[in-house]
Length: 219
Image 1 (cartoon, one colour):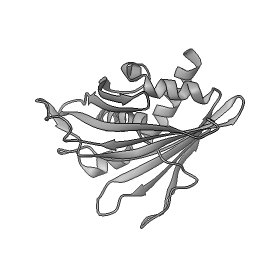
Image 2: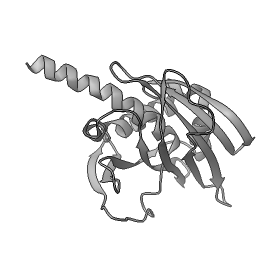
Image 3: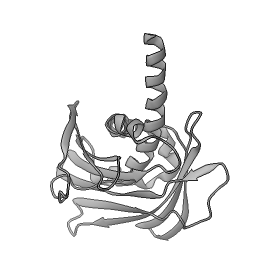
């Protein structure tokens, strides 16, 4: 009986890691400045210098998350990694493919991403408008992304994610360290029970930041 529960647990972990990771590449919001609305943020994990908070999304059964950590690197390197979309699969979970649909300029693009989910759930895809802005001193960068699900026709074999939005906030806090803050709100579309998504809404971004830390050291 224990083995069956463990297998089911790992099965759902794979599903939510995939959904959360791809979006955590693209979305975030400043933990210090985000305005609280109807629900307060709750601390969900504080481990390995990674802080994860969650709160309920208004008028849904889903939750959103926000995450924060500090990495020993430069702001330019983090921005470079986030803009290097063809290599997302090297540091994310379950991302099959990410490509540029249209490049407005070097700081504004439309991205398409595919996500492989295990049976019985259908694969997902998501389209996002990505806009990068820098502070005048170039010690702070914000990457804002808005989902545009109707930008191209739906693709056979994939469920288009109808909601995806958030921001990355990256700040060079001293010559050697960068603070990263991000949050994300999404609806995977199709049929994935909210309770499954919410169980692993903490594990997904936590795993993402762990992997990002390792990837920064290698590159």
